[in-house]
Image (cartoon, rainbow over all chains, first blue to last red; front, side, top):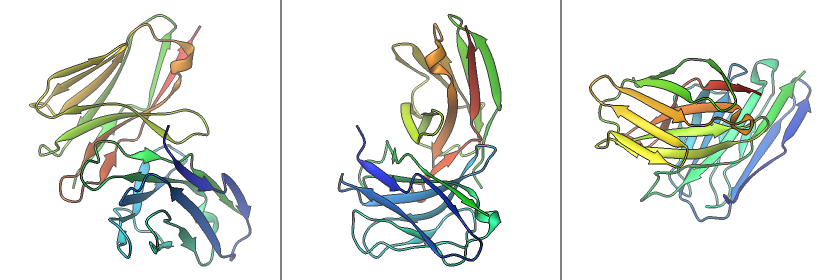
Length: 113
Length: 111
């Protein structure tokens, strides 16, 4: 059973609000990722991290930002939410030395109205 | 850049075999994966295959890899209604170790 958690599971928020999506894992994994999943199902990598104080932008440009102050946490922040940010956000983690498997959280479904 | 393509929908009857296909572009990928996503849930790793293998079987699942054509398939034998989900093919980006996903194939199993 994977120990990676995302909160909240669902969020409906008004335009212009600042939001932070939380992701925590208790497996001691160094690598963590954020994926954005389109309504049409395709996943896009938006951020990743190789460890504490490491953050990189992914393949899909995103207005969100991330931080990695602790190994266990990889929060994603939107300073000013817009309807175009409505999507499902999936967090994942894996080890540095053997990432044959990435463990995924259950996702946060964000709706910006 | 790398690209992974899948057909979007597949519908089968319970008890039949399902075959989900995927093509990828990065010939240097060392690992290729199949993930399953049930409604409202995250992704769950089903199986993976190392690039020097042609086939891997795990209970009802059979993965076939054709490196020449860069084609990966997942066969589910005796498909059950509980297999209804979205199945994602993914390859591992050797440059940064990131996973590159296909669009997902929605499998619908009819009783």
